[in-house]
Amino acid sequence: MGSVVEEKMSTTPNAEPPTSHAQLRVAGNTSDVKGRTSNILWRIVDLIVAVIFIYAGAIKALDPVQFASDIDNYKILPWPFSVALAFYLPWLEIFCGFALVARTLYRGALSILTTLILVFTLATTAAKVRGLDITCGCFGHASQNWSFPAHLATNLGILAALLVLWLSNRSAKPS
Amino acid sequence: MTSSLVRQVLILAAVALIPGVGEAVYFRHKISWRSAVLPSEMVTVDQARAWGGNVIWVDARPDEEFARDHVPDAISLNEDRWNDLLSQFLVVWSPGKKVVVYCSSLSCNASREVARRLRREAQLPDVFVLEGGWEAWLKKR
Image (cartoon, rainbow over all chains, first blue to last red; front, side):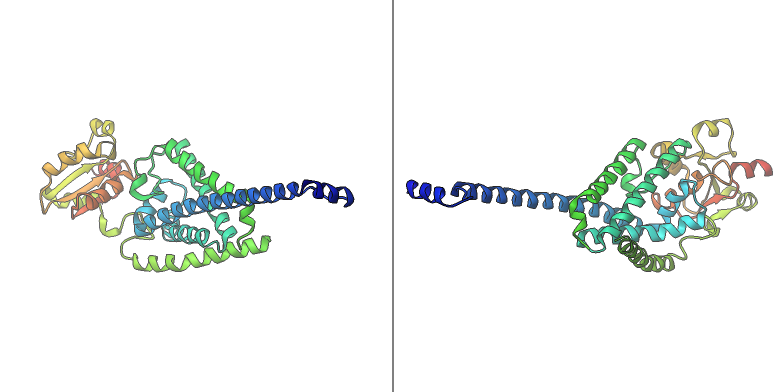
């Protein structure tokens, strides 16, 4: 058997030994597995970010009066704007969260959520610099007693996850 | 690609408006667009004084400011020591009493927050915020 192969190899130009095909197949399979694992990982990050925003939005949508007061505590916007945002922002977060889950309007959702988290982080930092003792209101009562570092770390963690999703190749595939 | 991104952002922004407007209509009686406190929850110094002995004055300012000076017979109840001070307040409170909460001035938030927590967490009726706070009281003293 070995001699027949050797004979064919010697008579066929550019022929490769059969073992190299097998190696390529194995390499291809490994690459597929890596690709699938990577996709699953991105999907998990997607879902984590989506759940965070859907939860945060739902908590605030249930109590817009409290959220308006929380926004007002930042002393950045006039009261009517705080009220308008209290009614609007929670639903924006919820819809963007669902867009990430459904992978529909994916890039639009990522853009909005990245902008929101940047604005929240800047507002929180500005409030801290100005010496305001505020309740962020990000997650309703759950975040009422969060310290500034905990608040900032959460925001930066979410921002990092969003940037990772932006930078991943996967984000180019969905609509 | 950019136009597609802008289109997606606009669609999401527009869709979120619908429930947002619906919620604004639903909560129209629970929040004022003009002031952080509903007009029915505000009280002036004169109005509160007219209630006479049926009022419990609550000082929402920090402990140091309360120690410096306060409305006669006022009880300190601030968010820094909420749990400790709330139990002290509830000893004094009785049904039928009106509660008037004040903080430093017109622009402070503490009285609003304390009043809200008294309504929600302690389930107390007749909780009011003093218009103008401690400054207004000083002017009328």
